[in-house]
Image (cartoon, rainbow, N blue to C red; front, top):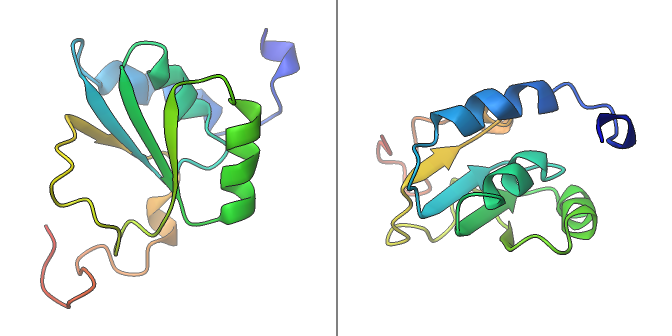
Length: 113
């Protein structure tokens, strides 16, 4: 029930992001998952959800809030995390990219995208 969820403006955009993940998607990465609302929503229909955040207390809050959800919670930095062979079908992020210092560069200084 909506009244039981804490107020969080980013929850408004979760439905939009969820709608952009194609049906039949098997593996999703949620970058900067924060409180975990998007990851939990995706876990309702995607069998393998990885949710990553650099903020340990926020990640722990997400783990606690969605303890029964089949989500792999990862405490790491997206710019240095070992994900090169992970093979995600989709990568989503809601209100996190402004926390990344330089999205054009990865840890070794070479262009990432």
